[in-house]
Length: 408
Image (cartoon, rainbow, N blue to C red; front, top):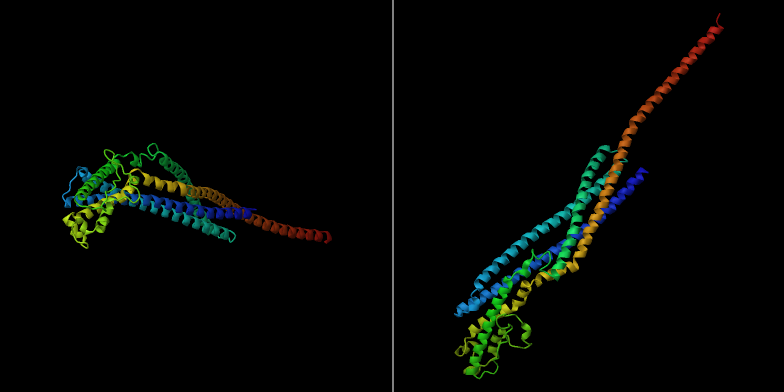
């Protein structure tokens, strides 16, 4: 009966260990995926900030090169410095936190797997050593299993906390997607509440709007002086003052953008400006400064290319997209892995406690039985000896009585 109980409990422990390993591996894999999404989002935000500051600096350098000044760029120097410092801070924090999270996830997974393996080895030693009467080895393994069982209870509490923490975090992420201002993460991720991002976009939009208007004014001057039919006005994707909002849909498909100006100038013949039919673009300097136009248009087009990404960053759409990926694809498997791990750890801990109690009681029962067996053996030997002595004495006494009767 006792051997059957030990075997059944051991099998339960082995199954619970296997389920625990499966749950922990699933949990840690999903936790690593969530960490990668958060890290990628942070790096994408940093890259977007660096792109916009780089484009702004290029425009400023071009303006300085050709002595162009505009009041719209007055505050951009401070803005660029602020953005660069924030980008460096985001990158440093992201790299540091992701490194710590990775180290924690890998360490916990390794320790859990190592503890499971050591427990299985100790249980096998107990099952094999107990019938072979290897008492010292069994006692050592039992003490070691008590330590492992205490660790299992700690792991149970830890994964139970992870399960509840993941549930609360996923709920908070879902709330943040619906209403960032009133969510619990609004104070931690306050990008939607900051006005600095809107101010930055307003300043950049105002600057580009003014430059495109200036380019269109120059085009009007050229068209008034030269009969250039292929030189169209540039579509301005920004609304007028005071909003200066970016509206690329205002420019229909095929509309001329500021980045198309160098290619348009290359297609124009020099004869349109009074030159020969095969003159080089540099020869257009008699009418316009081609290099200057190319520098301006290239730098402005760089800003326009990254403006949608900048809006996604400022309006928290970038963060919301990362949170949506986590909530939609990783929250449920993450919680499922944590729940499987703590449930299996609870079963394993209970099975180990029961198994160790059975082994302790069996060892105590064996220790009590052996001295009693010795005493019974002594009594048996003593009784046998006394019985033999009594029979000998009885025979001798009987012989004496016979001699007395027969004698004279």
